[in-house]
Amino acid sequence: MTTTLVKGAVPYGEGAPVDILVEDGQIAEITAAGDTGERPGDVIEADGLVALPGFVDLHTHLREPGREDTETIETGSAAAALGGYTAVFAMANTDPVADNTVVVEHVWRRGREVALVDVHPIGAVTVGLKGERLAEMGAMARSLAGVRIFSDDGMCVADPLIMRRALEYSRGLDVLIAQHAEEPRLTVGAQAHEGEAAARLGLAGWPAAAEESIVARDCLLAGHVGARLHVCHVSTAGTADVLRWAKARGTQVSAEVTPHHLLLDDDRLETYDPVNKVNPPLRTSSDTKALRAALAEGVIDCVATDHAPHAPQDKDCEWSAARPGMLGLQTALSVVIETMVRPGLLDWRGVARVMSERPAEIAGLPDQGRPIAVGEPANLVLVDPEAVWTVNGAQLASLAGNTPYEGMRLPGVIKGTLLRGKVTARDGRVAS
Image (tube, helix red, strand yellow):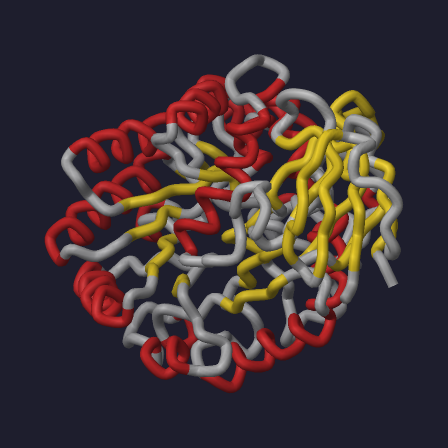
């Protein structure tokens, strides 16, 4: 029997400290701090740290196979564990594309071999992400990988007939379609949010309507066929309004927002630093304010990182040639604390909801996002809410260093992560 004792943690930041005894991957006892006594096995001195359910990321780019120079399943899993994650969903835009059982099973197997987080591959909706014909969704869903989410992220499923068919098939397979909402005819050559900053800087605009129109269309399609829809990386106030309307009429739609869209806005573009280039682009400060409110309200269901590592040659170049994307796994909680907890929009129960419970529910993971209670899986993260750290991209676990938070002092430090009782990260280091 493997045993770990977490001494003096405060579940959800509420009440008096407790001791959490973990045996064989489950929470065996929760007692008042100091009442557990001596037990064999590992001891973690939590000393008032906030205990939360392990985080679940619905939107991670691990780059394997194909771009192992930017990230691998091993390095991405390490970053996830250090960020408090116990499960991540790996996007399908790899090389080759994860549009068949061979690729999704490779990702699944590598995740199990690394064993730092549960790695769930996302399957492509269409063959080669080309939007022309549906991929083998049924075969991927029935494979060893058990694919539960399908997305062409990075590309929009723009053809409404293809999207309708995907939603119809998803209902029969009991899987989820996650849409990258971007009407491609409105974003040809786009480099930044269509607004004052882009006009002043001479950058081609990416209008908010390009996102909002696809979200509205897909909500109507999902409602028509009775399927579930998930909207990736919501970035505009208008999209939040569409989601509010769709949910009010009973549409089965969920949505995520990234940490960077909660914190950063298009004022960052003044330096033309490509580290700030992302898709969808950074929007206005009024959009970030609206997204925070929508997340607190539950109109936007959860936070997802859209962790997107890139090699230096793909970022350290002129803006127009740079690849869009930012690192996110190790900074996500700190950004959520800064944007949602410190202003009083979320308490620690709310953080658990948007970073663990709701994403696990959306993905259909029965062993993630569970309460901190006896008999539940010991997927836990321990947080020092008072600590502050300075972001240094070179010191992050990812192979890439393209973080927009370089040099920022952010609140909240992950002190430990447990995956089914196994310590995967501790005091800033990945467990061996």
